[in-house]
Image 1 (cartoon, rainbow, N blue to C red):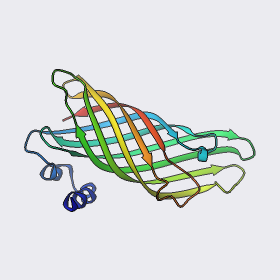
Image 2: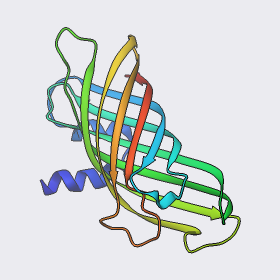
Image 3: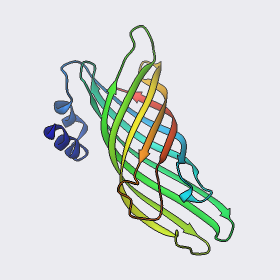
Length: 192
């Protein structure tokens, strides 16, 4: 277990070709790169009326057909601007970088491939208000996430899908923004 955690921490620093040696299993290697378009919904109103935000991301996943799990990496951005009472024009935005484990469950005879994932991430969030308040400013921190999704091929090397990621960051939160929530996304990707 310690070896897998150490490898997970080191994987973002390696090239994609070097990852092959660390992916469990002996079968064919599957890799995907995808763009996600979705909606970030915060569990709490810490975004103060800007609690639903468009989210866009880039995802990379690698696994073996007979492996227990593979790896996934992602970068996501969410932002929203609105005019709020008392503080005026307000913008809330954030960036996340994630790394985790992914298990893929092909269904024999079906084009739909479900998957689950579990991982960690780092984030930067900023709240910019026209009239300053105690919530104005930026912060960084760590998060944990779980996800469930499914993909379906549209051609030999492309696919579409849906993904739901559940984000928990308040266990390590020291700032004023509570970024716990969910991201529901459509996926457009390539497999190779």
